[in-house]
Amino acid sequence: MQGTTFEKELSLMKKKIQSPLFVVGIDEAGRGPLCGPVVAGAVCYKRSDFFIPPELEKKFAFIRDSKKLSPKKREAMFDFIQEHFYVGVGIVSAETIDRVNILQATFLAMKSAVSRLMNNFPREAKERSYLLIDGNQEIPNFSYPQEAVIGGDGIVKSIAAASIIAKVTRDRIIEAYDTEYPGYGFAQHKGYGTKIHMDALRHLGPCPIHRMSFRPVLLALPENVNKRFANVLKPRKK
Image 1 (cartoon, one colour):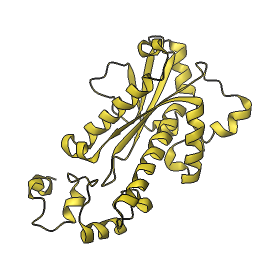
Image 2: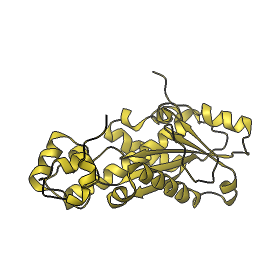
Image 3: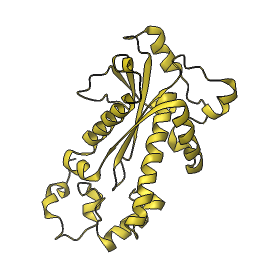
Image 4: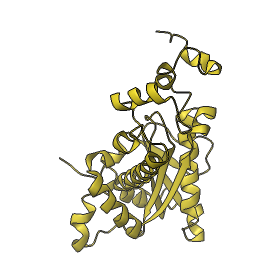
């Protein structure tokens, strides 16, 4: 199975698209769960030549799609990435997700991650950065040159690194919520709509971090609850 590489980053450097000395990979975690924030990571390798020292090749080989790594390996790679990449993280709450919808909240998280990343960059990086975003959509209304890469977390090393940063950050947040809101099993399912989660939701009702605009959350509640979200429960057009 082919792993991630810096080939995309190197091709941009060779083309000198607006002199992109700083190629930034961006990915998110938490679009699908029924609770908690959506988190975005933005990372940039600290070496502008994208050279991987031979003694670190085995470590760099584990910078891949976060879903392909065990939790223990993700944690180890999280620290490794923090050491070898510039890193920025953006976090957008469930409350904001309900207000603006999950797609727009994801874009907000990405913008925040890039902004935080830029605080760690040399000054000239702001004018010489190029963004690579996992997926099929660029970040709207954003001044940086950018490109969406479908399946990017599986082929572009910078995007894969961002996926690990985002996933580990979000998992840590949800595990902390498991202590704050016991009974839902957040540490086990990380907010996804598993049977354990849905059974707990029906029994306990929603807690402050649940996304009330998500249809499965509402369907788990009594009919007389949350009438203000009635539009979400209308039958969807086929």
